[in-house]
Image 1 (cartoon, one colour):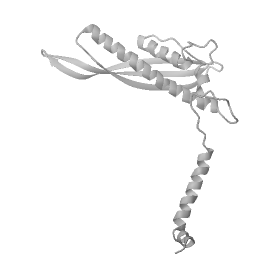
Image 2 (cartoon, one colour):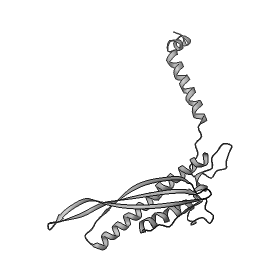
Image 3 (cartoon, one colour):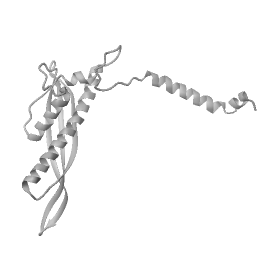
Image 4 (tube, one colour):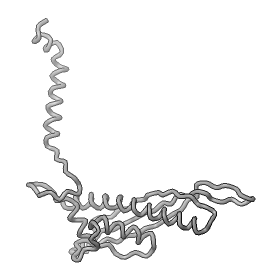
Length: 189
C-alpha cells in the first residue's frame, strides 16, 4: 500500500484529528493571559492590572484586636507597606469574626480539658466607590488555624493570639485576591 493509500485508509479519523488540532490552535491564539497584579503598559483592548486599583482603597477602622490585625495586613498588601492612600477612590468596610472549636478533649482527674482547637476567622468586606457612593464589590472568606491549648492560662492565651495572627495573615491574602479579581472585572466593564 502506498503512502496516499494509507492516508486515505485512516483519512476520516486522521483528518478529523488534524482539523480539531487546527481549531484548538485558532481558539488558543485568541486567548490572552496576563498577571493579575501586572502594571505593564496598556495595549489596545487591554485592561489595567489590579495593582493600581488596590492602591486606591482606604479601609475603615475596626473594633477588635484580630480585626485590626486583618486590617493592618490588608493595608500592607494593598499598598506595599506605604500605608493608606491620601486620595482614595474606594472605601472598604471590613468586618471580622472568630469562632473557636475544641478539637481534642482529654480527661484529667475527672475533668474534661480541651487540648487542641481550631480557630475559624471569617472576614467580610464591602467596597464602595467614593465618587458615586455605590457598593461595587463585596465578599466573604473564612480560614482555619489550629493551635494547642496548654493548661497554663498565659500559654493558652498566647497560642490563641498566635492562631489569630496566622489566620489574619492568610485571610488577608485571600481577601486581597478576591478584591483584585473583582477590581479587574470592574475595570473591564
